[in-house]
View 1 (cartoon, helix red, strand yellow):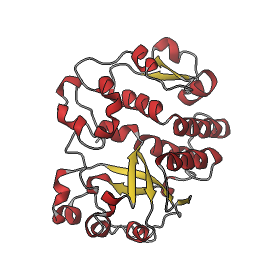
View 2: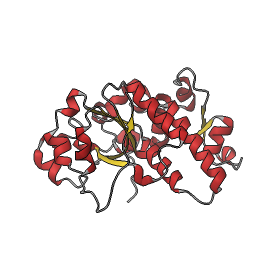
View 3: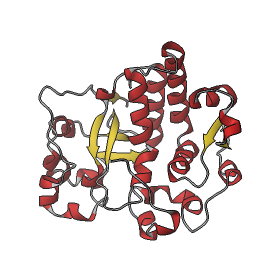
Length: 269
């Protein structure tokens, strides 16, 4: 069933103080309160160096016949539906992670040139999955990878619970659909992860490594490259994960499929 976001006035204000939305508080004035931000307000929030602009998605705009991604690449115009949670969170992703968004856009445009607009390649599917539901994970303890590979969620989130506090593993949500789903607290969020491994990783290095790898075509050639990460298991991200039974029994903690394997993380540092 397709997710339907709540009306702006129906959102519980407390969700903005919980993860993952709590990590986006620099944009609180755009997402909290009764009034939707204007397109002008989104453009005013652009960081230095961001030449792309948000434009209202209208019939007149779409009459140019360009694909959404082509319009960004050729004109720097990000078609944005007004009064729409999904597109608002997409705008926030552009504001914070412009380099990642540009890398995804360049790859999408290259695939459109190769495939046309009526077919989609495996790479396009992977790029879209990451754009919508992506998370970036910094892995500083390689021992945790074996637990993740095996979908040993009890091990990753319970036995190694301290790793999420002491910095051995850290997750940052990128996908705007995940942020939209977080408006409904009952959702058991699952991210699709790109992983960067190294003993001394700064947040900037992790994001730069992902953007570079995407732009070079080193990753996201197939949706199966992406690792599922049940965000509901991350300490502090769901109230029930303080109970061991939750990590064992909740529907989001699925076993690994027979024969399933994942590519190694990007190595840095």
